[in-house]
Length: 236
Image 1 (cartoon, helix red, strand yellow):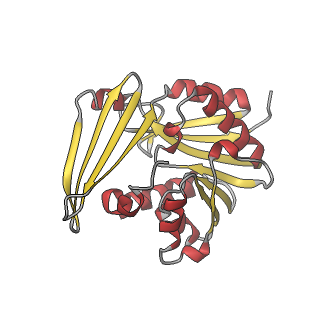
Image 2: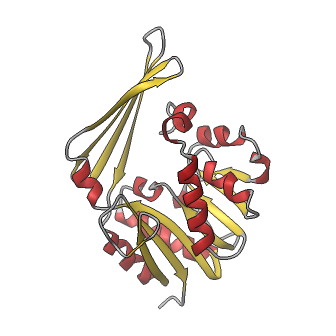
């Protein structure tokens, strides 16, 4: 299971308060209503920030380790936390919004899995509901044609994070070394999807779709992330 070794180090590696505010602003600008389901909530930084804005957050993640990290945080009691594989999402409840942030959709390895998530999210939304998510841009493939290497220390633990690209897949490898030289490793694989294909599949399900690049640029442009605002319409 991924996010076991990484979970206690995750915030130290990627936490960014300015970026968290960008996610909150994007949600406020494009979202609908107050009852929110979040898929792949990770360590809950964005989740809790949204809960503090008054959203009724039901946050889920495949990793129980990440959920436990989230529950330790200040104001975590504002959120309902659950372990859930987004592929197993059911329409037992209806939400105003469903969120899937921080390139979490890219962890789905098969196009059929993406289609399944789109259908289940659609069925979980109220009329007028909105699905907000992001995905890697195709530019990320070029960016990581040459291996990216980041090294440093997290308190007394040395780490190395590498990213490489091969055949539409991004391989993230993490290595952590404690003071005794003990090694812990974890690898994550993400698939980069053509954003035009994602738009097509959203429309097939019944969503009306707006697209942005890196939060604010209209349409598909050069950048790191493509942001999708998918509004529930009539299924054809």
